Length: 171
Image (cartoon, rainbow, N blue to C red):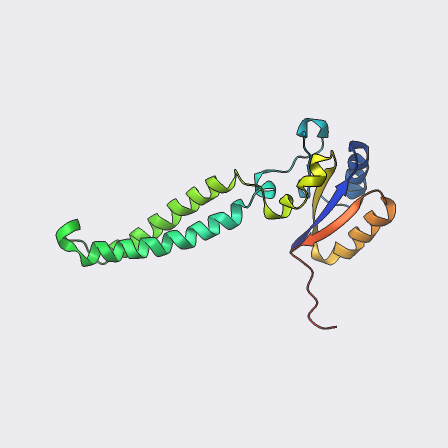
C-alpha cells in the first residue's frame, strides 16, 4: 500500500534537488510527479498525469455504480413492459446493468478530466504564484522515514500532507 506525500516547492532548482534526493532514497521515478502553472518550466522532471490532476478514478467508480443502478431499472422496465420493447428474457436485466455501468463510467471519467482534483484545488493559489507541487507516492512502511529526511534536508519545501490520511488505531 502506498501513500502520497505533497510538497510545495519554491522553484525549479529545489524541485530538481528533491527529485535527486528521492532517487537516492530508492523511490522509483514513476512514483514522483510535479505540477506547475507552466509545465514547460519543469523541463525533464516527470509531470503529473490526468489521474493525479483530476478525480478520474472516483468519478469513474461513481459512474459505474450509478450506471449499474440505472441499467437495473432500464432492464426491469424492458422486461416488465413487453408491449413496448417486445418479448425479452430475464437476461436483459444483467445486460442492461453491464451496458449502463460501462457507459456511465466512461462518460463520468471523460467529464472528470476537465475539473481539477479536490486535492490539487487547495494548492491552486500557491501554484499560481509560481510554486511547484511535488506529489510522491511512497510505501507505507517508509512514509515517516522519507518525509522526515526530505523535511530535514530541504527546509525550503513546505510539507502539506499525506493522502490517504494517516490514521492511528490506538494511542
